[in-house]
Length: 283
Image (cartoon, rainbow, N blue to C red; front, side, top):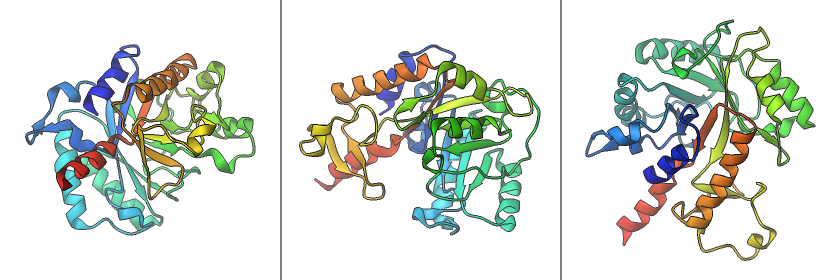
């Protein structure tokens, strides 16, 4: 998986921002930070660090799981990489707790109202009018990966444009039609006039049956590199991410994202590698 992320990095311009989603074990080799991999990305995320453990909404993550994740995240942050934490829950008490934790760890926490990632929310840190040039300047972010609530692409676009988040981690297509370059440029400006960063979602460890690349015949006969449906997310299939055909699909997707001018990618399902490692260990 590290090699695949490196290929994606080498397949675009040097100034393209890459944020990894979960899978933060990849930053370590032999209990030390893997310097080569560390250099490839610009930031990382962690879901359910404090709330939303094992897909349980509004439930505090177990102390054990939290500690295990912090063992990975704290050294990554100490070495200078921004960390965006996606928690799932609601309530002012939880928001205040996350604000305090952010001060201790220097992570950027948000509390999302649903596992569906389909709506706006009030950020933990207030909106600001700052121009945001890099991830270290980000004070808050929107993670919206499912635009199903919007009746059209234009409604989705206008809703995004009408926000003041510093960073957008978003789905940049609607019904398989991508935003135009002009629309992406529009999203790079907050409603209040400040500049911001626009990052496109890109799943590289799972194939999604609602994407433009999905072929109808795969519904009956899947290629041998599509391995197993994700038991938590229907329509998402774990893939042999090292397969050349899959890599070409992802690089084609990446090219589309580059053409519309996004600032970078949120690389999701990196942790698919663990599915294959677990199978190996059971043999």
